[in-house]
Amino acid sequence: MVKDELIQDIQKKRANIAVIGLGYVGLPLAVTFANAGFNVTGIDPVEEKVDMINRAESYISDITNAQLRKHIDSGRIRATTDYSVLQEIDAVSICVPTPLRKTGDPDMSFIASASEDLAPYLHRSMVIVLESSTYPGTTREFVLPKLLEHSKLKVGEDFFLAFSPERVDPGRKDFTTYNTPKVLGGITPACTEVAKAWYEQALETVVTVSTTEVAEMAKLLENTFRMINISMVNELAQMCDRLDIDVWEVIDAAATKPFGFMKFTPGPGLGGHCIPIDPLYLSWKMKTLNYTARFIELASEINTNMPRYVVTRIQDALNRYKKPLNGSKILVLGVAYKPNINDMRESPALDIIHLLAEKGALVSYHDPYVPELNYENIHMSSEKDLWASVESADLVAIITNHSKYDYNMIGEKAQLIFDARNAMKDAPKTNLKVIKL
Ligand code: SAJ
Image 1 (cartoon, rainbow, N blue to C red):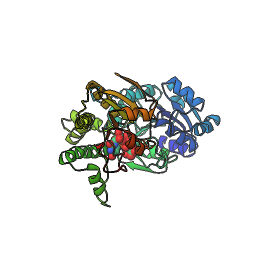
Image 2 (image 1 turned 90 degrees about the vertical axis):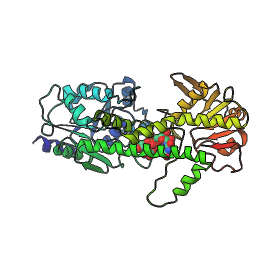
Image 3 (image 1 turned 180 degrees about the horizontal axis):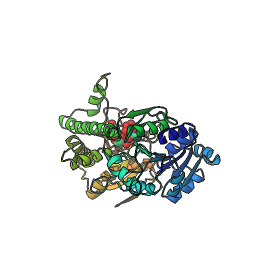
Image 4 (image 1 turned 120 degrees about the vertical axis):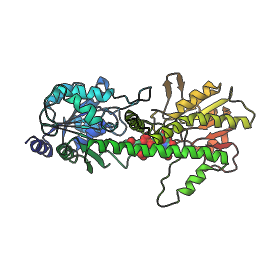
């Protein structure tokens, strides 16, 4: 029986593994499979990445060169751009990006390419697991037909196909690929069984569900939950501003409730590669079924409007001191999408800089993690002299509250501060020059 033979090969670590897509999900996953004793081939279309991996040079902060070196030297990991290696591979994880198109629709091109490039090498006794966050139905309706384009093999009998959402939080140390519980659902029960037998060799906890759709939807619930709650506190911030109530104090007070409450904080907008994007895969799918996912659409509208709201608040703050925004020097402090990382994906700081410049402000920025900004119409370098920039700005806008900033010193040297992150929470309350979101 194909299933039993494959499971046995997996359990004896005789199965050859491949990971397609060597990014922040795929590379840690490849190393985690190698740590468990499997031979792993990483496949990525970007030659430079492949070469760096084969030189044991990691470009993913969660994987050190030393972790890679161990497996490159032992021959347990190797990387290639050549999909034909898949004819010798027994188990494949697909970890490719699922971004949005400019139109806001899902960009399925990466999953399509991976599936189409894999299909010619699909063979009996093979298990494939898709990890990319995507809309419910993708594995069954989109990937499976592409895999079977040139094949008469039967899924669940000759080969096995499952979905297991990635839960990588780059930079997090307490939860890693190994110890984060992994949800997994197959096209058929046999698919679930084989994929589980594989993943549980390398991961601490595998949670099986009945179908790929349940696994796909579970991931979207995780991140939609987060996106909607963030948008709710973003709207709360706007309500509190009109009520002249400190929203940060309100949230801290509510957070003392030991049950039935989860703390989220307002911010200048929603950045990152997951939270602002994954829920829109769900709302897009629902539109194809003539259903409007109103919560997601409203939350997305509120979050997307936060940069504009922040600029309005900055304009109002300057107005108090009879300074027009037009011609004022604004220093944006922190541009990464969240603190203490250098990731700029979907960062609201880019929208804020663009809007400020559009209104005639003289905008500069400082971010210890982001030396350069080169996006569409934004080409800037981080200010070299932080304190000179803070002192000379008409307003300092704290957009991303990196821990390494000295907020007391900023409070002393800045003329006026708009604080979008409550970073100045320990500054004296009487400090009239600090205006909070
Ligand atoms: N944000 C707020 N208020 C909050 C929390 C976040 O405005 O209360 C903003 C952040 O500033 C950022 C964006 O939302 O711009 C996303 O922040 P995030 O903390 O959700 O960080 P991400 O995008 O790295 O989310 C990842 C997700 N992980 C995966 O999808 C595997 C998310 O599910 C995790 O919950 C999150 O990390 C985490 O907890 O760190």
